[in-house]
Image (cartoon, rainbow over all chains, first blue to last red; front, side):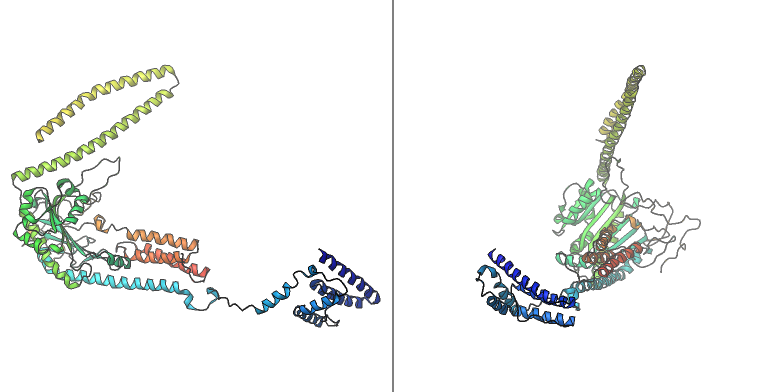
Amino acid sequence: MKGFHAFCVVLLIFGSVSEAKFDDFEDEEDIVEYDDNDFAEFEDVAEDSVTESPQRVITTEDDEDETTVELEGQDESQEGDFEDADTQEGDTESEPYDDEEFEGYEDKPDTSSSKSKDPITIVDVPAHLQNSWESYYLEILMVTGLLAYIMNYIIGKNKNSRLAQAWFNTHRELLESNFTLVGDDGTNKEATSTGKLNQENEHIYNLWCSGRVCCEGMLIQLRFLKRQDLLNVLARMMRPVSDQVQIKVTMNDEDMDTYVFAVGTRKALVRLQKEMQDLSEFCSDKPKSGAKYGLPDSLAILSEMGEVTDGMMDTKMLHFLTHYADKIESIHFSDQFSGPKIMQEEGQPLKLPDTKRTLLFTFNVPGSGNTYPKDMEALLPLMNMVIYSIDKAKKFRLNREGKQKADKNRARVEENFLKLTHVQRQEAAQSRREEKKRAEKERIMNEEDPEKQRRLEVRQTFLTFIRGCLLAPYWLLNVILCRHVHRLKA
Amino acid sequence: MQPEAGERLEPGADPTWRLWTDSKQIGNCRPSKPPARPNKESGNRTEGLWYKPPPSECNPALDDPTPDYMNLLGMIFSMCGLMLKLKWCAWVAVYCSFISFANSRSSEDTKQMMSSFMLSISAVVMSYLQNPQPMTPPW
């Protein structure tokens, strides 16, 4: 505060001096020029708190020169802060020295000197201002990934195509000797034996064969791995999977007896038992080991009855199963085949699914994914087994006891199904009746006339009584008949 | 030698083809029962009675949902890339389109595939037109 007071005193002194100088000038221009010079002089003093500086501007006519000179004076004044300080000190010799007057002043020359000594920092140029491809490394990575995917697609697709063609070339002769029609996609109205595979996908190929005794047709499906999909290729590196050949033979109704039988790897049979409608209903026991018949430990058997197993496991079939056990995933013979279990929505009445006499074969292509066209020749004996199985299924017939047991099983399944359906239908009928009653009650409640309301209530009670009297004998008859049917079947 | 259509039909016989028309029977595409008439057989082959293959809709092996899911994902990522101006979303959309194409069935409509491709590529192009800076990873 003392310093500030001293500063104001100094200003006042110089102000009075300047006024005296103004009085000396009669010309306004001179006054203006002098004003600029004088005020410039005092401005320098006000900023630096110094009265005079030796680098003060000399009046000149040219403005540019004035400005340049002023600037020079300012620059010089910055550099000559020490000189100003000296002059300040000199000027104030007459006044008592106040330390507080120049508080912070000493810091200023220090900071300016430190500024001149600061090292030059080089800031990194932002990426978007750089003219180099290196900054786009992520984009280059993406494009490289896409190119790799495209290359893998082409290579995988071609390999699957070669494998399919190799399989067909190997099996063509056998198929053409057993079937009249080999290869048809079903698009033409007339029968056309194309003699080639039908490509459903980049990894699935179909072949339809028909024109043979005892079977309606045979659908062969080559299910290769998704070699054209890079993600699938990478996933297979973690978990190896094999290519598969699935064969579905649809038998004529009169050429196959009534039985359900399956043989294959234990894991495959457990999965099939859960998924397939017929295996879950007719073969409820766990898969049994085939060691009794001389099968390897890797194979298990699911059968409706022991007679079927004994009949199916003849010498030739055992030979096939034993020698090619590593290639066999599952073999499923069924007269009640209806596909996988169907999940019905609630509220909808169940419908008994239509069944078909079918032989299903699933074979694994050797190689566990690393398959070559020459590996397809190893599957030819399995196709021989399929042909043999077709003839075997036609010849095999159950004896009287087996037939009775099979019929009993089918009747039981049908009855259970009808019971389930009956319960659902009853529930639906009950809900409909309740809805009707509720609507009737609402109508009675909404009736304003009390006489009319009473008459409606009486009418409803009477109708309910009549309905009960009429339906009671029908219910009794139904119960008696059901019991009678049970006794007969037992 | 492949048989020709109609060559082995008996005189006055009905057409041999029976269509698998009962499409309501899910999981079991069965033909209707052929008429009882003698077939001309040579060895095990029956010449004159052929059945039509089951339609592909009944084939459960082709119920792979991967192409549909990838198609949908591709469209979602494309929209995210366009609306939110996220370059990495646009690039992921391109990858989803490629994966959907690789897993698609031959019977599928190519128009949807092409539209998915075009959408994903336009998402990438628009992202870079709006902001030519290099992509920054999302993490």
